[in-house]
Image (cartoon, rainbow, N blue to C red):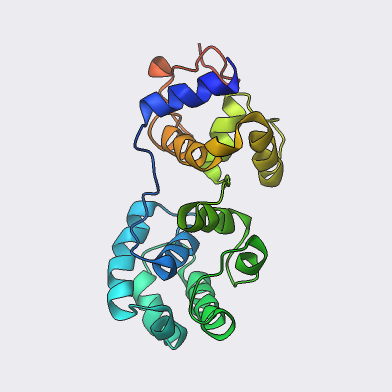
Length: 206
């Protein structure tokens, strides 16, 4: 099964696959993506409703008291570190980028708490730059389907997926792999009995 067939089958399964984080502007998206590390989008959406009500823009969050922010996002993992990250990145966006989230990879990863995955999500989602963000779902699914090497690092997974798929597919592919990993190809108890890729799965149970 070639990459084109895999892409089309994923598209059939999840034609509306898109970012499941709720956001209204560039500020809200980058904060949401930073908060989403090692937690669910559902959990992030819940705290962000309160967070953005109190801090409606990057300027207000840049001036926020860390203890106040911690109280709001305490229900998600690593909340102390994430509080520091989102306040610091807000300060940097205000001071260095006139309050606007930057649109280059280099500028994005210079912000506190923003790594390669977060930068790629922001580039693809906000600025429509073809990118593949490798999270735990993308990493797991692409290895199970034999699209990348089993021992590939996240950076290597990203590059191997870029080589395997057309550039115009990259951003959508990211969402398709996430949805497939989130709803079908689960880390534990994957739904192998209904999997359209069972014949190529490297971890097939039957």
